[in-house]
Image (cartoon, rainbow, N blue to C red):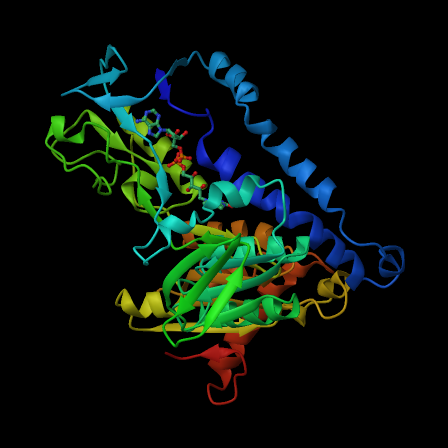
Length: 438
Ligand SMILES: Cc1cc2nc3c(=O)[nH]c(=O)nc-3n(C[C@H](O)[C@H](O)[C@H](O)COP(=O)(O)OP(=O)(O)OC[C@H]3O[C@@H](n4cnc5c(N)ncnc54)[C@H](O)[C@@H]3O)c2cc1C
């Protein structure tokens, strides 16, 4: 196996995305956590040390050096070729002057780049993308964030906690439009509590920068000013300059693939990760790499697509897997119910301090008696997701879930509360507090 890399081994996630963004978010969350717990709160009297936060971020991204990743490649016998790769016909890859010929397969894993929308003046205003936002050595006094998806919400909270006055502009009527509605609404409240000004249903119409100040004019005539502007309005595939035309594919678009992540009609060509547009998440790219490698080795037994698990690492975190209620209905499931309980419904949650926000939902396909989706919103709920993922992938029946007894007093007892909410609805549909019938 040979890997061709034009920048840093490890990709966007390791240096400019997942890793540094979580590094910027975590210290403020740890401090907030301590402040919610009596006893610890009395000890947590200082404020965040911004220099130390940025230093930890730098440590996490190894000062933008990939030397720590190279021994891993060596241990696995993978040859590293530094340079820009382009396809040059079937099974041929050109790297600068040289041509590599693949005996078996070529896998495209070139990722995605930030999409900067064609708003007049935006590109000229030299906005931050995820790269500047995750590696900045300074904290702007005022930061404008365009986009209320995962990246926009995470970066808004990170910079607000570091001292920026943040304004978040989102065209939709709520944050995190892909998630259950309650998640976006509760996150909006948390943003407001942190001092982030959230402008929903707001369209940026024009951008100007002069004398160090960026001004965004909105469709309704209002405007917002800041020292920096972060564009977090989505990604586009890095497929423009890859020589796709040499194998009959159109450059610049997401690369279409089948269930084994193989390009239809080209048995030797695979596309995994952000570049195929299926799911712009690191773990889903890694999963696709596993499936594609099994296919290349002729060992693929099942390739039913895995449900997508995702975490927005804000405070509260939004952890979800599978389908939202709306997505389940849109997918044609005719007998689905959602069951909701607050996170604070368990004894374990009391140790997470006063006023810890939170909610949870399971979406049940009642025809099959199995969970098809789950969302947890709260402090430190990211690790809860795997239980729901296993229940969905294993199609564990609701009856069997009663046998998966959560320990007392853990917050995992939220599962018990969710099952009880379903029981209550079955006993008395009119009075069940936690059930939503679409
Ligand atoms: C701010 C931010 C936070 C995020 N946080 C999370 C998170 O917490 N969890 C999560 O799961 N996902 C997160 N994501 C998404 C995640 O970063 C991406 O899904 C992931 O990096 C995609 O991996 P990839 O391997 O497809 O592409 P990339 O990580 O982009 O890697 C592609 C590599 O290909 C190289 N390359 C490109 N073209 C060529 C060429 N022609 N020749 C040679 N090399 C080339 C690039 O230099 C790069 O190293 C986040 C994204 C952003 C922007």
